Length: 168
Image (cartoon, rainbow, N blue to C red; front, side, top):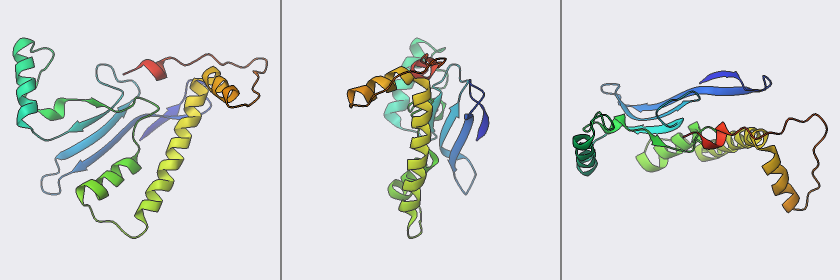
């Protein structure tokens, strides 16, 4: 994980994170979860699956035949960037760990799920706080709808930080 200060200069922000599951035989990735705050062409947060599937490869090969610039590697599923929620709503390390234990049969120790769930809760609350900073008026509207009394104070910068909500 690579950190920097956010746009306010007050809070730490993850600007890049890399998570990968690799083969112990040849160290090649099986799956990767990448996040880049400054991603250009691909989604900000995305999975890359290093596997092959005949039907998917066929689809990509047909698309490549029509427009090679759009699908550059039709036989390489790992070249695809599968979006997963952008800057604020991306998966956390705990999601990957639970996937490995529950879906892939990776060994675990007693109590692993409690640890994963505590970490995930902490992650999601941190992301919620960041989202609230990015959408203060929306947050205030929701709270008012729930019966809270919420008023802006003078000199509060509450403009929505639009890039968080529109970037791929």
